[in-house]
Structure formats: C-alpha cells, structure tokens
Amino acid sequence: MPMSPAFKERLFPHLPAIAAHYGTPFHVYDEAGIRETGRRLKAAFAGIPVFREYYAVKALPNPAIMALMQDMGFGFDCSSAPELMLARSLGARGEAIMFTSNNTSQADFEAAAADGGCILNLDDISLIDKVPQMPELICFRYNPGARRQGNAIIGKPEEAKYGVSHDQIVEAYRQAQARGAKRFGLHTMLASNELNYRYMVQTAAMLLDLAETIQAALGIEFEFINIGGGLGIPYLPGVEPLNIQAMGEEITALFAGFRERNGACPALLMESGRYMTGPHGVLATRAINRKDIYRTYIGVDACMSALMRPALYNAYHHIEVLGKDAAAGTEVVDVVGSLCENNDKFAIQRELPVIADGDLLVIQDSGAHGLAMGFNYNGKLRPQELLLGQDGTVRLIRRAEQVEDYFATLRFEEKILRL
Ligand SMILES: *Cc1c(COP(=O)(O)O)cnc(C)c1O
Image 1 (tube, rainbow, N blue to C red):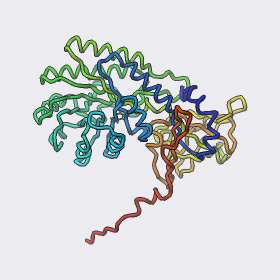
Image 2: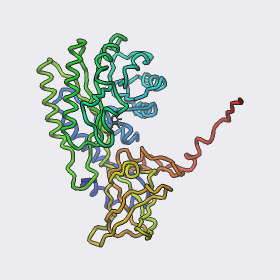
Image 3: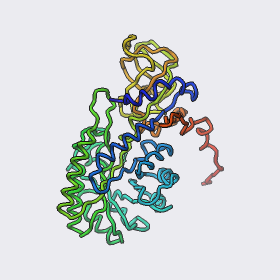
Image 4: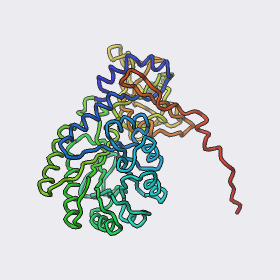
C-alpha cells in the first residue's frame, strides 16, 4: 500500500490550507511516519548486541529530515563531499558517518579525513595505496559477482561497477592491515527496492560467512558488517510491505549462531534510504490544464524536476485527487508536467477520478529519491519542501529554487587560456 491511512488522516484535511499558504507544488514529509518507521526498524533488530542504521543521505538530503534520524540515534551514509558536509553540519562526526564512495578521488579522500573523519568504506583493492593516510578503522565494499543475483534497478552484481571481488577480498584486508589498519568492517550493497526480506537475510548470511573466512585467514575480528540499503517499499496498491519483523528475527538468529561459534559477533549496520523516508513524503501539485487529443492529458504545475522516478525507471507512483474518489466517475488520463520531453509524465493511461483545473493531486511515495534526484534540464526549477511536524505545524524546510539559482553558475570570474 502506498501512503499510510495515518499519514492521510494527518495531511489530507489540511492540504487545501497548506497549498493556499505555501503555494504548489511542494513535497511534504511526515515526521510521525518517519519516527514510527525508525522505531520499527530498531525494534526488529533489538536482539543483536549492536545495531545501527546509517541513513543513506542521498535519499532525502535535507537537514531537517537528517536531524530526525540523528535524534533516533542513526548515523549517516554519505557518498560525496557535500553529503559529508551536510552530515557534519548537524554535528555528526567520526564513526557516526560512513563514507561509501566509488571511483574515489583524492579530493574525496581528503573530505573523508577532514573534520573528525568518518568510517572509510573502500570500493576497490587498488585504493588501499591511494588513501593518503590509512585510518585505524577500515571497511571494504564486497561484490559477490555471480554468487548472487541482483534486481532490476541495481542490476546483477557481476555487471556492477561496485565493490571488491571475491578473489581479492582477503588480500584487500591483508594489505590494509599491512598499511596500519587495526579495526575492520565489511560492507555490501546488492539490492534496490527489494520487498523479499529473505534476500536481505541471505545478504547478512553471506557477509557473516565471509567475515568468518577472513577472520580465520588473517586472525582479525570484524567490528561490524553492513548489509547496505535496498529495503523496498510497496509503491503499488495491494502489494505486501517488506516483512521487517521476520527479517529481524532471522538475521538475529544468524548473529546468535555466529556468536556461539566465535565467542563474539560484529555489530549489524544498515544504510536504508528509501525504507526510512520513501512512504512518508508526497508531492502535492495542482491541475492547471486539461487537453483532449488522441489521449486526455492532465497538466499539473510540477514536472520531472520534482520527481524523476516515473520518467527514469517507468516507476509507478500512486496518485489521489484530493476530495474526489472513483464514485464520482473516472477516466483514463496521462498526468504530465511541462518539460519538453515526452516522458515527463507522472502517470500513463491511469484511471483517475475526473479531474478539473484547480484540483490538488497527491503523488505518493516521493520521500526518497524524489526532489533529490530532480534536475534543471529545460530551465525547470525544483520545488519547495515542507515538514508536517508532530506538533501540528507545517514548516518550510527548503525553499523553491528561483531563477537566480539557475543563473548562479553563470556568475564567475572571467578566465581565458590563450593558445
Ligand atoms: C543508494 C544507496 C543506499 C540506499 O539505498 P536505498 O535503496 O535508498 O535503501 C545505501 N547504500 C549505498 C552505498 C547506496 O548507494
């Protein structure tokens, strides 16, 4: 099921007033829902001696949302220098930040080591000699290759550019140890939007097995394994959500087994993005035009600058029309933005209640990889973000882009190289 009934109850009665006050379009996020998901995640893994979620910042890189994560005790998973700066702007330091880059540059390494450092997660064996200063705590991203199947969004591990291969993984830790590393973590990230919890259990089992192999080979002890993100959410109505309780129980049992065999077990880390915020955001947009040609088009005041997933992945995002349901009559329409790209559509041949100009459309599950993925192609600006607080407020947490933002990179000191 897309948007939860509780979120709807909190939002829908107030949506006309919010739209009147702030104007459309906007993404609005639900504090209560995010906190509830955080509580459930922690409860599911409470049986493991140490569990910590590192929120994948890229999903919704807004400081107000990140502050909620921090308040729940979560760390941050970052992959770029600006994401590191965001995490540090909230006061996160050192082991509260995991830096998972790939094709890592020297500038990335410098950013990782700056300002209290972070947990460095290396993507390749060749990077060991390129890290300016080997940190005491080091992690590698593992790519199992043909040992595992991936899924549609992320592809097969064998074809993925990420991670250290199976044949290189023991050697990678050996070399890191030789360069002075003393504490170790093991990471992987294989799935995206995976609704089958067993896949995540297999990932945990795979990493625990590998940790035992490496421990035996090198006489080291792993402080943590990190099973990555990729926990799915049901975008389509009628789809069962991921069974986080069962996932928690089965992974907890794996950790108990590991502890029995080895006397101790590593911490479990996870870096969910979508699962934490995806269902707790919606894009509210107003219908401004209706066009009847070979198909019927409902033109709205948002476009793919606000939400790329439908255009990029042909992803389904559930849409409701505020105050209208099927009982009042439906029709099949395409819901479109104003970009000069024919794939700038939020829905294609979707049966919706009959829509009139001025109606508010609620495009659901926009809380992850939504605004953050938006772009300025065609001079389209990204909309504002709002937070529906638990205290009965609706706060602006990012203003809409303005034309000056679009022109900002055109103001620079003149530079010419004469050849
Ligand atoms: C994108 C990403 C995540 C988060 O993925 P979700 O599907 O949002 O859970 C976690 N870790 C890494 C390394 C990523 O690239």
